[in-house]
Length: 477
Image (cartoon, rainbow, N blue to C red; front, side, top):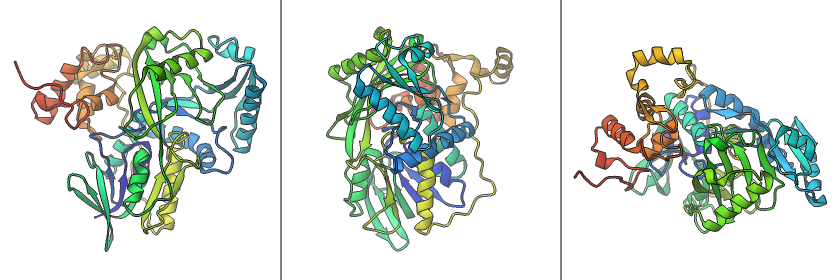
């Protein structure tokens, strides 16, 4: 019997688990996939939004404004990579777009955002020479940044587990039943977890989880966004995150560096029929390329190394839904967390904990809570002399497995061993970047598979790409 069961191992559920792990509570995080950060989190833009965009008075405005610095502070503690690179919101010469830029500036002031300024096109190009000569007015957002969304989630959940949180993967919730002491959360496999409180952080599936307890007051609208990721030789094309003025469909196609040195373009925003609709399309990718080139004409799309799509969870009211269930006591919905959900994730977690207290949850701080997670990339950040000494003590760090990203055997073995452990090829990829370079795993995948098999004591035929039946081998010749 747990005090709290959290449904959904994305950035929201993961950060809530981390924030709850500072208290004397038993917490269980439930994830339907084989690993965490597998839904919208995995295919997120990774932008830390400054807070100028949400409508004043909304939860989005409140938690975005609070969330920026909270995110940076927690990222420092758990060693999740981020960069405060700032962002541009660009108008392209029309009076309507220029009026929108000015209106966003005023809205940002109402939301309490500092560090906003309006630049002329020439002033903006002095900072970003690759910016289109058609850009006439820019909102410069100096507190904005970029973060790796799945590394943030892995770090938060790893820190939560190190502080006592239990993680259950491949736990696809099929039913929620009331019990004398709270709830029984039942998986498709028949597995069962009992808890006094349940928090619904199920992303694009949140309305389905709500329906299991009789709540139907919100409906998730899945909206797919396609992206293209370019090689690192395009990563310095811009230093800021470049937006166009937003529309009713979202913040539009961006051009941005990533914390790992690549260049990211996208996303589109298309309503889809189901949360698992993550296909890329020729039309969608052509739209990304065309609109990205409008902002930065010199982007070389011959350097695209991968494309992908993610589904975000929207709702017709246009705001976050963070409130107790209406049909039962003891359940909290944290739903419709689309943009700026990543930016707001720590503030959302703290706000959810306040509501849980109001619902009766007792929170007593642990004396031994450790907010710091060891840096998984410490080896990369060492000097050559330090690396040499470390390799002498740990020889596996001297053997490079992924040549594109310079990832060693030692780093891969550590990723398989530490919380939350990598169980498959994509799990190793998200933790170490092995397979994320221009060859996309063409050289390193067999070696990674062998390491996973060795560490888990299984045959290589049992190693999967991303859980379930995604086997890569069928037998030996």
